[in-house]
Amino acid sequence: FIFSFSNKRGNFHVTIFLLLTKYFFDGKIWIQIQTINHTKSYGRNSLMKTLETKKAPAAIGPYSQAKVVNGMLYASGQIPINPATGNVDATTIEGQTEQVIANIAAVLEEAGSSFDNVVKTTCFLADMNDFAAFNEVYAKYFVNKPARSCVAVKTLPKNVLCEVEVIAAIG
Image (cartoon, rainbow, N blue to C red):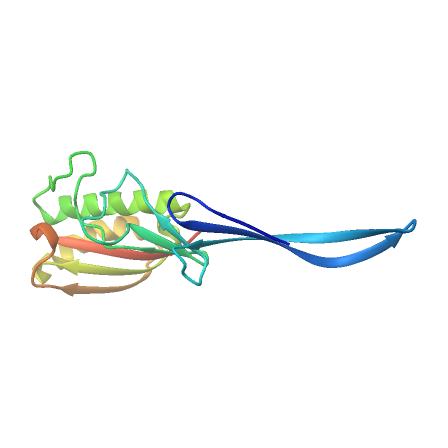
């Protein structure tokens, strides 16, 4: 038996009942079933959830804040936009890194994860001379020392000084 429906966002939810065992008892057939719930987002082939939280800045382009697939969080890069104001308030690398970390914390929290579950980060700096100051702030939060890449780039969105994306386990 298969039951399905779609919601307003185009997500399809399917519940499949699998016949596991037939039991014969007192002349009647008893059936043991198992349910499997599966959500497909926009027709994709894997179990995928789009994550969105108001505690982090909204995406400023055609992308989502994060995706959850098979128990893993893949978060888009966070820049130091204050979600309350929509502006980049900090002007120093330390202040901007703190705001980036706060935005990452909000995405991790929404996914049911934490800094302890981060397995990989990718860090982008506008100036590699900010590397040491960036690391001082970064080290306070990523105490489990996830795998990391850190590169300097020519320009970041909104001319910010840093951007960080994370991959984390859920749970």
